[in-house]
Length: 326
Image 1 (cartoon, rainbow, N blue to C red):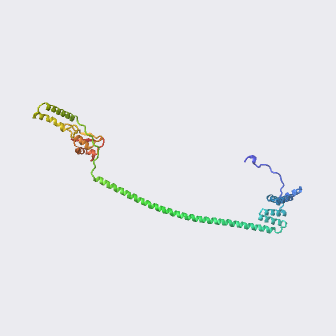
Image 2: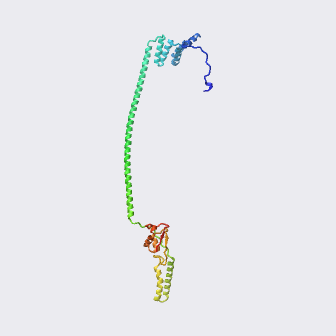
Image 3: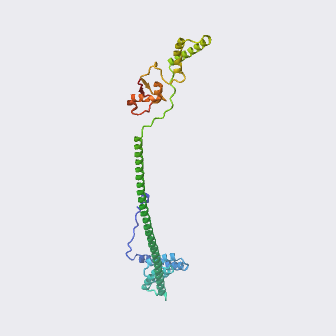
C-alpha cells in the first residue's frame, strides 16, 4: 500500500458517551434547538406517503437508534415493513411499539398474522412445487438411468455376440489357412516327387549356326572343280580317255563329291580336333557334337568327358570350359 493511502491521521479528542449514546446525542441536539426525532419522523412519514418506502425506512431506523423507546417510530416502521411485504419484521416492530406504550390499530395485528400465514403458505406451496419438480426430475433421471442401464446391457450383449462371432470367424480363418497350407505342401510334395521321378528334360536350345568350313576343305573343293573342268575340256577335244587316265582322274573327282562345300556333314580326318572349347552364346552339346564330330548324336562324348563341369546335366553356361575328346 502506498504511504499516501495509509490512515495515519490523528484522532479527535472526545468525551465518552457511555452505553446510552443515542439518548445523549438526542439531548445534545435538543439543547441546541434541534428536534432531531421530530424532524426524522415527519420526513419519514412524508416519504412513506409518497411511496418512497426505502428512504422512509432508513429515517425511521435512525430515529429508533436515537430513541429506542419511541413508540410512534416503531409503529410507523412496522407499517413501512408491512407495505414492503416484510410481514415478519412488521410484526416484530409492532411488538416493540406496544411494549413502548403505543396502541395497536384495530385489526392491524390480525392483518399482519394473515400476511405471515399467507407468506408461509406461499412458501410452503413454493417448496411443494420445488419438491414436486425435484421429484419429477429425480423420477426422470431414474427412468433415464434405467434406460441407460438397459441400453448398456443391450450393447454389452451385442459386443459379446460380436466377439463370439469374431472368435468363430477367426477360428474358421485359421482352419482355412491351415487347410490351404496343407494343400500347398501336398502339391509341392507331389510336384517334387514327379520332378524327381521324371527323366531330366532336354534343354531346348536355339539351332546352332553352321560351323565354318575349314580352308583345307575349300581348297580341296576348288581343286576338284578345276580338275572336273579340265577333264571336260579334254573329253570334248580328244578321244575317250583310256582306263589308265580314268583311274587317274577319278580319285581327283571323288573328293569333290564326297565333301561338298555347301553342306559339310563331317569334319575331314585331316582337320585336327581342339582339346577344349569355351562356351559362347548359342552353344549346346548337340551343336558342339555336330561342329567337332559331324554328328549331333555324339554329344554324349562331350557330356561324359565333362561330368565334373556339367554335374550330371546337359545345360551349358557362358564361359564354361569343356573338354573335347577325340
